[in-house]
Image 1 (cartoon, helix red, strand yellow):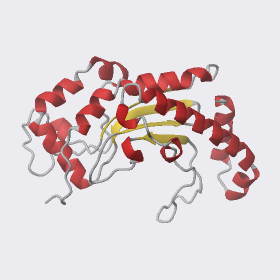
Image 2 (image 1 turned 180 degrees about the horizontal axis):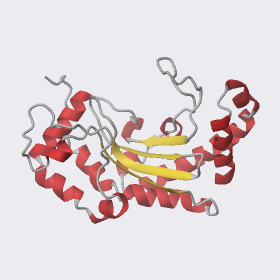
Image 3 (image 1 turned 90 degrees about the vertical axis):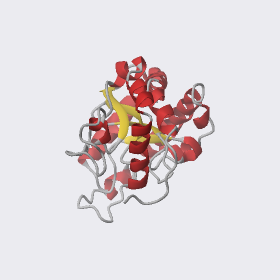
Image 4 (image 1 turned 90 degrees about the horizontal axis):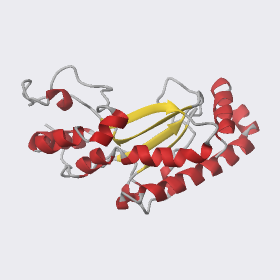
Length: 230
């Protein structure tokens, strides 16, 4: 993929986030979108070597649209300023009550690459199920957190939107209470793109996502929960 062309396009889009500009530059976008599809296709193939559940994913369904949903947003800019993809079994990349982890990455206009895996802001029934599984499988959860590959690449779980107090029904003295406060069970890291070595993008992503496989595996062990929380 032509990473320099992509970051240049995204940078210009950031400064000209309007429909007329986008229409004028649609040929550039179409070329970059096709190249990004090739990246996602190759990445799915690489992920399938260690995670058979995503081996058959549709790369087109994994790619996020560049158009923003502005119906209820104060920010009415029509386009996202990054290219992104989410890879999950059965192409279910969006949070649902049934749940399940997703591999995610995006490329930003400033030349940064963000990638990771897990469940980002799952809906209430799924979040409750994850927390209950954490309590019931504290040993397995702690073992997952100590995985050397996970620790080396990501450190700890992300704490974005973390609760100030324990959720209802959780003992504040529980040894894993800080994790029970989380609203996402996700790891990610942001690194500079290797602009001069685009052929290394997919190997870098596949290696990094493989390092999150311990979290992905643990989350897949969470029992499905469809009822609404109390």
